[in-house]
Image 1 (cartoon, rainbow, N blue to C red):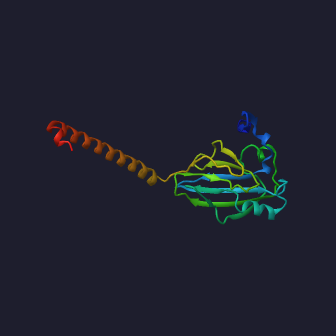
Image 2: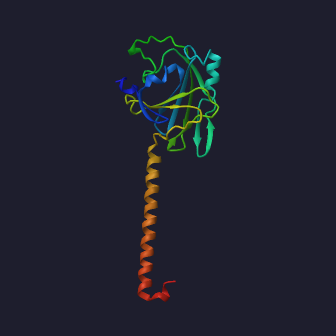
Image 3: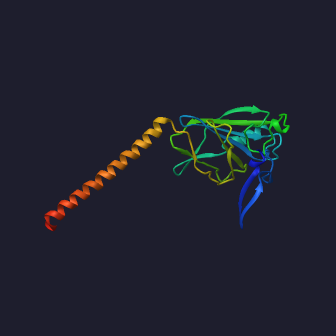
Length: 214
């Protein structure tokens, strides 16, 4: 099952190359960004740095610096910083993480030096888009966990400096979905009503003669 997740389509100069995910390097070389989609448009982003195995992150202080502004949220044409995070220490990678991260069922007994920054907010948009600022040196492995379907395979992507994620749909609350459907329906009624009114006016004009059609 995890082997199936270890296949990635790498888009490179000259064409597409099919290669195992492990060819991109060990998971500790990336910042692991776990995006959990919660009910009622809530979003939880947990970004983890490994300061025990990542050669670019020498200690906890360097990990905190890397997690200070790892990615930003794109709103319209503006990149919005995530703001203040809650920080926690961990020793094990998430059991649902992509296959570059070792798990207990693969013999990993923990003991890692991990630092996690977490942000939680309610989205005002039906989708969320992340983008890496141009000056970032730490690549991010962004992966998504659907809280309503926790056993589903996580969707993931690699973000480098300047990269933008795909638009990720959030879990809209029922009233939001109903409002969007109602608004779309109302718009359709207005369009249909306007079209019918124009047809009736045109029919009257044709019956009364060209002089009455102005």
